[in-house]
Image 1: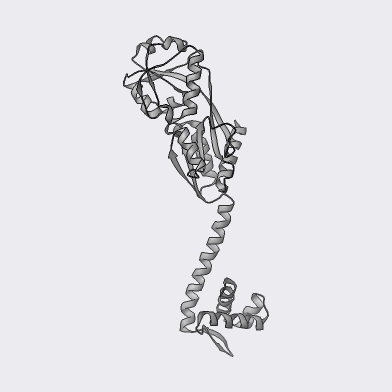
Image 2 (image 1 turned 45 degrees about the horizontal axis):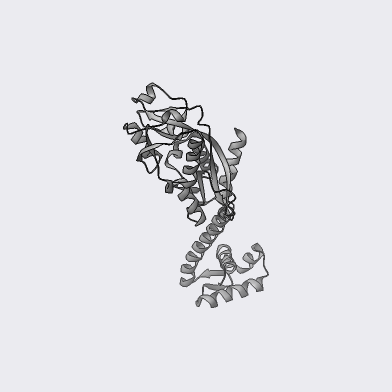
Length: 297
């Protein structure tokens, strides 16, 4: 039994006649009769009663007719869904992004545009720092990620710049630094500083430390946070100051302010990153949307 035989069977039932069904298909009547006989042999039951007035369903045929229609509907749905998945129109896209990026206008715009263009592709967004995103991409646990400083010359990964951010000093609104804003990093020497563990995102950590050292500043770390959201809350509580991407201020709690320092000029490119061998077509669709938005800016 195959789907072709099922279609022939349904055509005969619909027409009520083998000869009329043969003309409609079209197929030679003897060939159609043979296919019906093979179908009945495969099922192991007589499905059609033949008479000079046409054909009618047996009791077994009626039951089989209902199931055959259902099978063909499901088969057509499966083919349709497979084509849409192959074209990036359907499926699930696992996307990594840091907590603070979720409400950044550029990222919101990208996700909204992708959702509008491909409404049947569900987005499973996971909150991860940059380094864990890279590892998840390498181990096929993410399809794409949004992160700072992906590994250079990585044969496994490719990337596209979504936008470039800059660093700012973040302080408590009631602090001395807020009342008398510094102009350079060196003026922060001795100030209580909130930082993060290097293991959380080594490349980003090292680049910032090198930028600090070039300006003659070594942070006096008194408290560590696991992510930007935690560090912002510690600053708001008056535990110290910190350096963060300016975009983090979009979702900052009340009680913190940012200060632009003259010598804090390191550019932070936020990258959309994916595996070069990504097989999920929806990844390519996300890249296309990101590139089109970059061209429209």
